[in-house]
Length: 305
Image 1: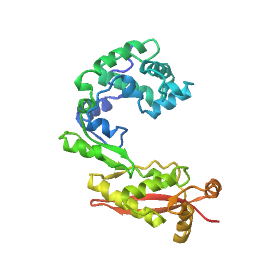
Image 2: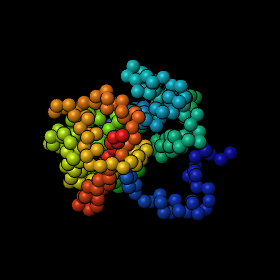
Image 3: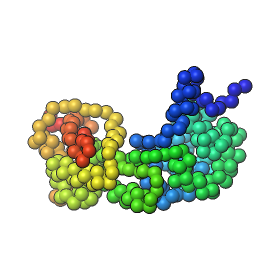
Image 4: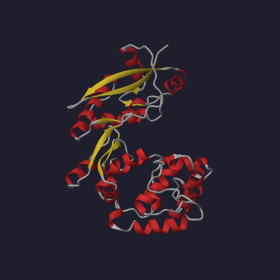
C-alpha cells in the first residue's frame, strides 16, 4: 500500500516530480505574506510545546475546531492545558480530510519533525510527546525553523500604528534572514466597525497628527506609510472582504467623517452606527508614493442620501 505522504506527495506526473525535486526544492523561500510574530523572530523564541507552535494563534485551526463542535476554551481559553488543546485538535484533524489543513498538518510533521504518522486521537499522545521533545533542541527555535526551511525573506503583517521595533531588533542582530514589514491598513478602512473611533485616536497619536478631518486621516496614514518605507516595507497586504463603489464628493466624505467627531475625541454615536447598517459605502482610492513604487489604498465611508 502506498504511503500517504511520500516524497512525491501531490506530484502525480514525471514532469511535476522533475520540476519540484530538481528545481523548486532547491530554491529558498521568499514569503510575501506570513503569520509569523515579529517578536518571536527577534527574540529567537523557544516553543514550550507543539500546542504553542501550532495552536497559539492559528485562527484557521481554531475555525476548524469550532466547526467540529470543540468548545472555545480548547481553542483560545486559558483554563485548559496544552495537552488538552492538542488532543482536541487531533480529534478534529481527521475531519479536515480534503482540506489544506490536513495536508499542512502532515507536511509539517514530516518535514519539521520527521514524523510520518497520521494525526488522530490514537496517535495524538505519541506525536505530542515526540514533538515536544524535539522542540527543546536549539534548531527548533523560531530562527532555527526558518533556517531549516531555507527561508530567505519573510514579510510580516503589520498595522500602520505598529512601531516595527522587532523588525529593527532583528535587522540589527545580524540575523541572516530578512524580515520586513508589510502595510496592512484594514483597520483604517473599517469605518463600520465599533472600534474605528478608538483606532483613529491611536493613529493620530502615533503619527503626531491632530486627527479631526478625513484629510487628517490621509495625512496620518501618509506619515506612517513613510515610516514603513524607511523600515524596508515594499508591499501592501489588504484583507478586504468586499469592494464598494458609489459616487461621492469631497464634502460628503468630510461630513461623514465629521460625524465621528465629538469635541476633540472620536466616538461612534448611535445615529452613525445605525445609519451604517442601512447606508451604502463609497470608495476613495489614494496613491501613497514610496521611494521605489506606489501603494494604492482604499478608504471606505458611508454615502449620504
